Image 1 (cartoon, rainbow, N blue to C red):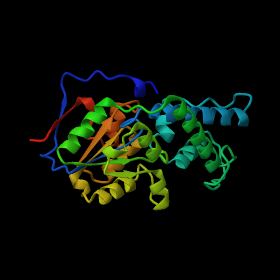
Image 2: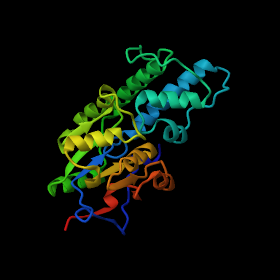
Image 3: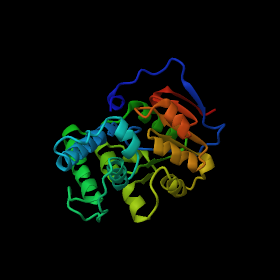
Image 4: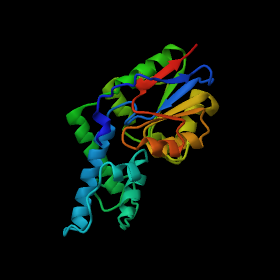
Length: 262
């Protein structure tokens, strides 16, 4: 993932967002790649998981390794963990039983692979720590300073630990993550369920809220939920792909936004 660790040079022509004119009362942010620089950590964990898995199943090299960013963007980015596993292995013509979330990490099941990926992610996170995007922090503080509500909406089951490690949990009125999604039996992105549920918890109608996403499936979820504004953040997905998925505007970093509250 080349884009997730680059320091942005913000445009001299900022993108205006008329917060009051749009009637916005809340903004819902994805976590990885939008708030924190953890999309690259996820990508490296996915690559190690799938490269090891494919090597074991096809030791003669008949299966090409997991490709970054292509396979990450196409199959796992923004999706609940087990859905990402299933999407990628099916793309390689491999079928596995789903198993259960209690499966041992690395077991020969969808859940077993997903649990192994989680272990790999936490190992890298322990080694590297968590860093936030400065442009996103500035936007969060500006929104909250003007009385808007904020939520972090992620498919990751590690959302809360990541926010806690980064000291960012206090910037959100609502945190809705993969654990909540599973417990409430809601559908993951590109379905809008998680964003709609977070908006309800904020007591704000979708037509009064914005969604900020870097994943194609996340942008599609924001559009499917009829949110007032969907902002795509192009880390690696591609500007055209984010616009095609339903983004109203696309930036490379939120520091490019010119928020107007007057």
